[in-house]
Picture 1 (cartoon, rainbow, N blue to C red):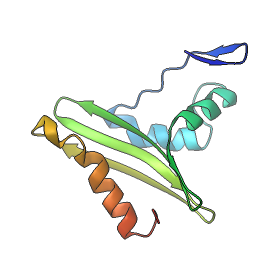
Picture 2 (cartoon, one colour):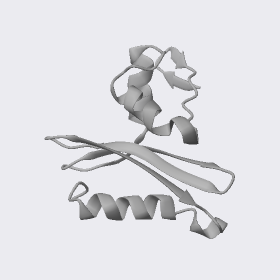
Picture 3 (cartoon, helix red, strand yellow):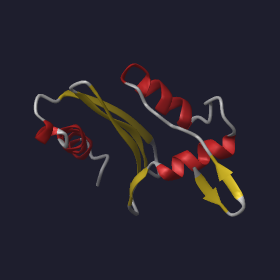
Picture 4 (tube, helix red, strand yellow):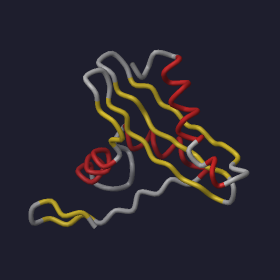
Amino acid sequence: MIRIGRHAVSYHFRIYLGTSFQSVFKLFKDELPVSRESQWIVKDILVSEATKNYVLRSKTGMASKIGWWVGWVETDDDVYFFACNIDLRQERNIGDRINVSRKILAAENILL
């Protein structure tokens, strides 16, 4: 539950392995089956990092021994979507889903 002024918003935004990218894209386009205002609130919650060059919105998840990180990066010129699924053989590797993705986004000059 999120409180904004006198309003309370209860919306569970969960991303499951099979629908992760589709859900993220629909959220970006304000096409989820909830109010536009609720989608904007969720987008604000998903801000993982904001710099003068980009805004990174993302969500992590895990099922069985598979971890994922999905989201998008907004720059002044473009929007870049990403989805990364990684087999997590050991719990200590849980950060790999983010670390690997960030390295790729940086190598592509998306995260500057």
